[in-house]
Length: 258
Image 1 (cartoon, rainbow, N blue to C red):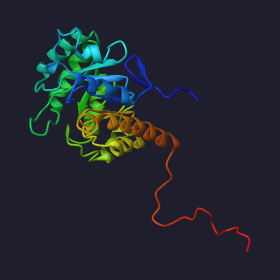
Image 2 (image 1 turned 120 degrees about the horizontal axis):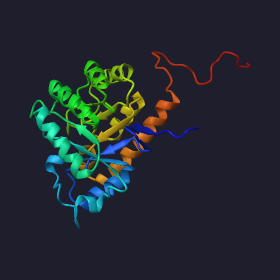
Image 3 (image 1 turned 180 degrees about the vertical axis):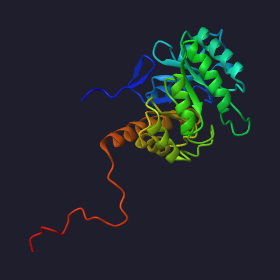
Image 4 (image 1 turned 90 degrees about the horizontal axis):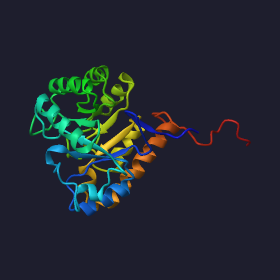
């Protein structure tokens, strides 16, 4: 059997769990949680990141760019122009073409501004970025983003940091039937079962931050999320039995010797 790899841009990943680097009690805890999660890609918010700090005690000292692929994100940007400038800063600071593109439309819900997202995507793809946009769970928007040349679409499962899980799994399923690029559930995952459900649906990966960093025991939750993503992926590949309204005996009566 060929190795089951996640392809993003020109890079292959064994892990299908992407984790954030915010909200942890310490850099040591952040490092340990990332290691426990088995993730190979980590996100970092450029607007909250000291771009000039590469010395002892910096995030780089705990989560090495030589070991992990950094995914700079444009969190906190409310216009396309702001997101484009932030992406360019991230490219220069982290020496990567990857960007998790966020253009926020509302401060209370943190839902994406779809118009601004499409506008920024168009410009960043043109500039050679490997764009992974955080978007709504709208299949039409997902298709438009694919047509613009993104590397993956990242529909929200629920509002950022809410821990509500997948509020609309049916839209996620439609998105997977609409696009041919990887679909990564981003935002809203609160516990391991949420991650497993996303993977059982057939999503290519899950991205989370608060679900791990905000847990009572972040390291244990990171391990739980790792196992959930692996189990959900394996269950999807195995193919679940169809749901039935009535019982079906494991040992049918037909053919039994009396």
